[in-house]
Image: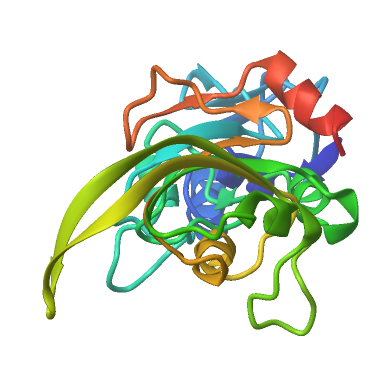
Length: 251
């Protein structure tokens, strides 16, 4: 791939385009062992060697990170008031990372962070029907046929019902909660849900439609990518080559 030297350096973590232009003009950049002072020259990312202040630049066109998103962090690239998921990725030098899809502020779990626009588009495209699996703790009294209703599609107040989804109830227990009416007994369900859409608050609204309230939500997987159980909330790691290939094969 051929790109301008200033973009090459900016994408490799050497600052903004303005920063790297000053860096180049200072004579600190060598391309194939020759000092260059024109930030607009084209660099072949596969064959050209670029050295900045004696250090070889290792260029990566795309980066892929698996983040275990913690509650309280918003799914965005920047925000004036809240910490964002991109800010959690400390090891990247790139300035163009973004989250693939959204998780609500109070939702935890798997989030893919990358700068690969094509992969993101393919994973989020409604026509691809990419599966996403969640762990949901739900209180209330679910309808007896809740599983069947999920599989047929639910009216959650949108123009059309949801696409068929899969509900698996892992356990049911009794729980006491207090509200303005006092203490009352409810059922608590531990469930897994698999959906192929990404509507606003979709899982929460689906449970509301069958008599439940989501108290805790965590995404476990997206397409072939499964959350690494070794990652604590807020931790991340790079995807392996096999994981990246698996995601691309699903799209």
